[in-house]
Amino acid sequence: MLPSDAICVERAAVKFLLSPASDGAHAPDYFPVSNGSGTLSMGLCCAFAAASGSSGVALRATNPGVGRWLGPHADGRGRAVQIADLTVDVAVVGGGPAGYVMAALLGRSEHSVALVDPKPEGAWPNNYGSWREEWEALAASLQMPELLDCVSTNWAVTDCFFGGSFDTPDDERLRLDRAYLKVDRLRLKALLREKHAATGVQLLEGYAPAAAIAPNLFDGGLLVVDATGFESKLTVRESPAAGGLWKELAPGYQIAYGMCVDVAGDKLAPYDASAMTLFDYRTDHLVGSDLLADAEERPSFVYVMPSGEGGCDGCGASAFFEETSLVGRGERRLEFETLKQRLIKRLAFHGITYGEASVREEEYCYIPMGGQLPDRTQRVVPIGGAANTVHPATGYQLCRMLASSTGVAAALSAELSKGDGFDPDAAAAAAHASLWPASNRLQRDFAVFGGEFLGSQPVEILRGFFGAFFALEQPVWGGFLAGWPGLPGNENHATWLARVRFGITIALKFPPKVAATFVAYLAAFTAAYGPLILKSIFTPVFEIGVGPPPPDPGLRARRQRARDVYVTGDAAAKREAVEMLRSGRAGGTPRGEPSPQVELLEEEEAREEEALAA
Image 1: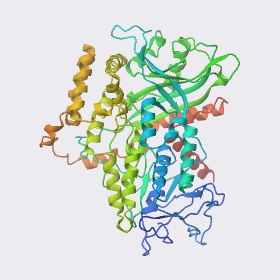
Image 2 (image 1 turned 180 degrees about the vertical axis):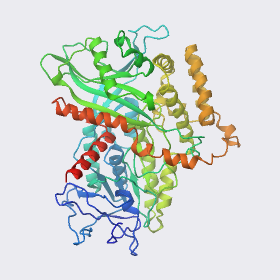
Image 3 (image 1 turned 45 degrees about the horizontal axis):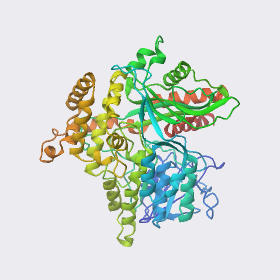
Image 4 (image 1 turned 90 degrees about the vertical axis):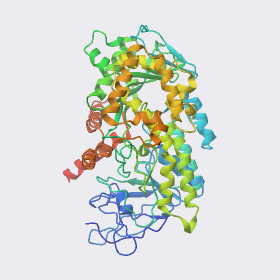
């Protein structure tokens, strides 16, 4: 049982009660919150602590003027007591780009905000890339021209290699006349910290090891923005039936292994040092290898970000290489070790050499894609990965998150500005409506089908598909890759008629084998999951009442059994990344940077080991 000692959670306010462990490094046993009437509120308890009450949260204010630890005391019975609190309009939970941007936007609108970040001084682990055109559009829509300074590398053109199928030579380069950039993640975080300081956002170092969260129970009008990422424990997902599906369609996973190295001499060929290589789907480097058959059936591509002069004697250039599985699930989900071996063989085949001492920024990328959208009836407001804004067919996430943030912030700000008329349920409903109106959902359904198709195909079909895709007009293919209102080219996919036009145009460019495979998969997908894609492209027909059959009465039970995938994700993939990271540290090789979900697993295991040792 949770203790009854408590503080109030007032309407539109958050009061944090803290009780760190004696060494100030671990979470307290309890994080009690009450509604002021003597009954236990599940508001902040559910937001930051396990439903059992066996774990909680430790917070430390890191902004100037707040200063000190807000703990540690107990009442002699081992229960937390209040020693300090902080009252704000909105609690933004999560220390990634989504949380930082939302806090900055709400702070700019003169709302009091607390941003809870478990590692406020840490660097964001992922490398982010963007089309230059999209980044410039976001700088304008967010009214943050400083975003244009948060760029580490620019490339005027982008290259692709799809050789090896449909009479395309292995060495044929497809050059896209579109500029690409690498986001300077350190500068971006620093910029947003500056925005926070200017508007009084309170940055709190927070630790929330909740094992089971019930996010839908709030007594006192608490407004929480969930920016904790893809596998959030705070956000409830809607049922498959609510999403227009006949049965569960679980997330797929983009898995990638990457590293930054200093290339010996000037040998970067076949990759152009002045271009960003977006896709290299060739498998010629594996001919004669026992890895070839698997690479043809479970494809991966490398993308290459050259970044100027290397940092060692004799180095010609520094470059980031990442071997990537676009999306996979179950047996089609690739392993990190497999991707690493493919990358090593690819670079060796092309004569690209580097010193082991130069290997840095090892990245174990893990991105859930697709899956069910958030339940629109909950009071928690998700953003970024928690809101499933990741592109379900490509894995692009940063620009889509930024584009969606302005609407969510505006919706929340409008409700918060009502003063005594503020209704937290209305605020959450407005935010959900901004994120996923019917138009966005229909467009996403189209992309979900695309992701399912791409994740099920061998490399031959993917080469033919992408060859046709990039033969479209640039605003059309660019709009699909963006896929969010406000981003360039989205008008080419935002309506059912635009999607029909896109589908017909690309189908006419497919090689016959790709076209036949696509049509067969469309039929199989529809038979298995319902007319999701048909509703997306023939929307007027379904709006007059033609739709899926009634929900399966056994759906609720199956949904409950499948629910863990949205919290635990692909545990085997994360476990492999943790083991490879630990092996690298023990062997003295460069330490890699895990994706946030992998890092959480590693931290949870470390805490369990400490508890057992104690």
